[in-house]
Image (tube, rainbow, N blue to C red; front, side, top):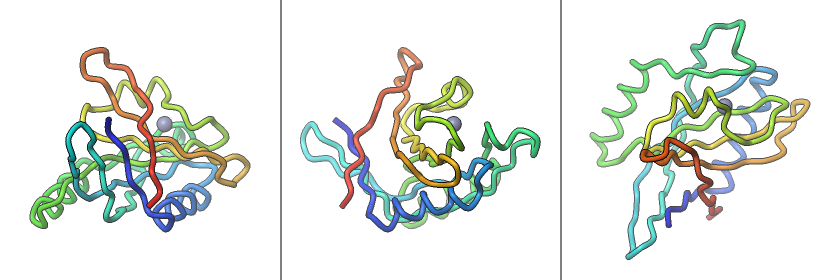
Length: 146
Ligand SMILES: [Zn+2]
């Protein structure tokens, strides 16, 4: 069992970024730590780092890409603080909060993928997903607001 823990302020920040970049996709990374107690891992997000969507401008309504160099820098500064990049968040403008085939093909195991659905500029739903590296499919990850 693996849960993602977000503060209400972090949830609001992801929703606000999704609304601001609408009708394009926003994206960013989540930094924090994994806390295990027995069978349960709580993935505690400590900060969000908004990233520029560097995908081809014509396709930013349906796609996002994080600059690999910016991601590398974030990984380095997180690990210097004894923290991890836990995953990514992005928005789905006028689409459900479910991973697209593109999302699946570009996902890595380990990371949490948070998707916020933005309908007509308003946040309506938020989900988190983990890729199973055996089956290469996504499964839902519970989000706990704390
Ligand atoms: Zn997506």
